[in-house]
Length: 87
Image 1: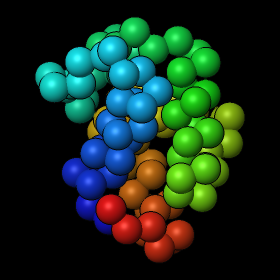
Image 2: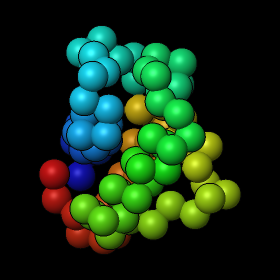
Image 3: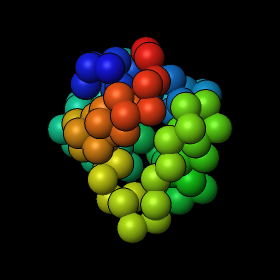
Image 4: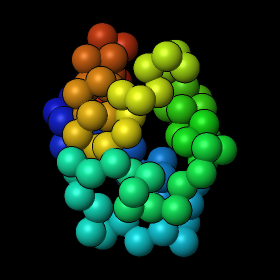
């Protein structure tokens, strides 16, 4: 899986969790919480969906790795590839 494919998967999850958010102009290097109206429950929903949809576990100690789309990709791509997840 590529970094761009990973970012799309994360955006797909956010679109399902927060359908009223406009995801068209998201900057990949800016914290998601600074761009979107995501609260801590929304963030937990993202983590839960990663586990439910793709079998990817994100320990609480690593939550900060999911701050921006770039950091999500850097953290998740190796996990997706190790798990054999395809975009």
